[in-house]
Every structure is written in C-alpha cells, then in structure tokens.
Length: 104
Image 1: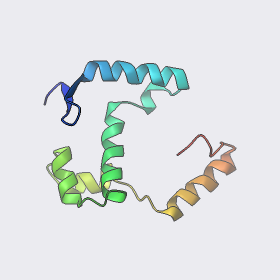
Image 2: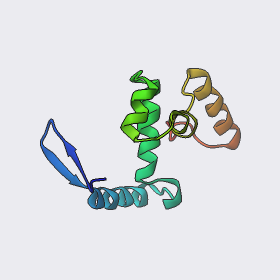
Image 3: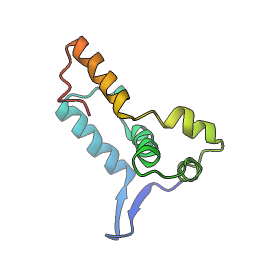
Image 4: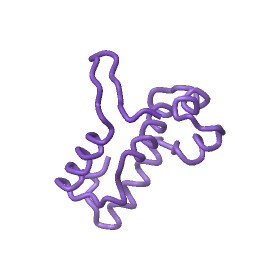
C-alpha cells in the first residue's frame, strides 16, 4: 500500500504522515480524544457514504476498500443511515443532554 494519496484532478500528492499530523492538530483544536478518531475512521465514513449516499454497489465498495469478504464491508464498515436512524440517535443524545447541533 502506498504512503501517499493522489488527487488526479488537481495533480496533488499528500503524504499520509502529514495528513495524520494535520488530523491530530484538528482533534486537539476541537477536543476530540485520540482513541475516537483517526485515519481508519475515514475508511468507515467512506464506506458508509458510498453505500448510503452515493448508492455505489456494496461489491464495488468492497473492492475499493480491498476487503476479502463482502461481509466485512457490510457488517463492519457500513451502517444504517436512514432518517429514522438519525432521529433515534438524536433522541438518545438529547436524553443524555448532548447538544445535537455538534453531532452530524
């Protein structure tokens, strides 16, 4: 696996080490604990977005993430993302006294 990300449209290359460093600075600035956020979380977010928002076939997402089994992609990396699920999560956060304005 390469240690750089490449954006073909802009012809830019981002060193993953520098990206990780930038994410740590953002974490510190917004007060996110390290064990809760990292580059690996972006894989989960990507999978979830591709399946639920972009409507990409799960088998294609499996290939993008290089998972050997589709069940890994579906069971561990992709979550239900319906309006009902978001409403239920919002109700739970309100019951805990957490502002839903800070959670998306």
